[in-house]
Image (tube, rainbow, N blue to C red):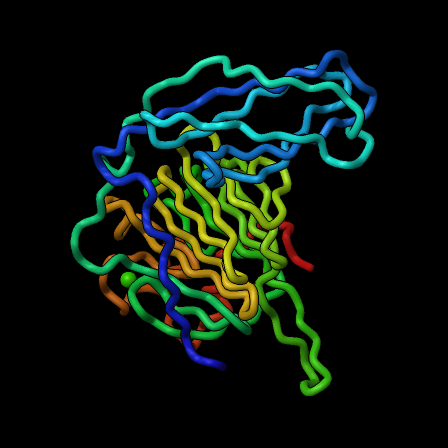
Length: 303
Ligand SMILES: [Ca+2]
């Protein structure tokens, strides 16, 4: 155990009063092709890349794809794009800005109170620290709920799950586990998946070593120095993935989330005594950690 590492949470990029616009850009091919067309896209302010580069795909058989950028208003941006050097290389593509809309800054409604945010951590073998500060070890070989909306346990509005997988070492006779992927699901659908190599998927689309905006003002993802920094506005979560330790740090940013979450990282109600609550609501002690942990297993997810 190398100790619990606190990492700086990616600060919100939308301070109150910062006027933003969502810019809709349509990429249009001259005709449909029988393979996917991949395009590198960046949004630049002068020579500064504001968003990107990201890779968008116009699927085979289709001729256009609309993407959105959300960036500070009252500026002139350049959309930079180029075809990926594969089968797409010689195709004709143009972009059209189709619309833009004002965006109200979401932080104005989700400013956390000026007390420390509850932060839950799991890393290495994995060692867990709940939102209320309880440390424990849990070795599983399945996918588990780290935290989720607990106001409606059968239909959580959001769920953060982690895939625990074996890590075999010559120095040890039994396998250890560590986290290989983290998923954020919203209303039962996968919004974001962080992979162990710092790549990530947004709604199934793969991003490699880049920065991306998620949908229309839903959040941002930034990869920097072997960390993946995620800022989500709804649910109001910050996540930091630390590649060298396979660690994930989760902060709850919405004031209404405290006491209304459950999972391996506890209920964030400020009381460390009740953190080992199983998914059936029964509270156990550290002696029954596997009973607790297994209750948060995602069914059918075992190695
Ligand atoms: Ca608690």
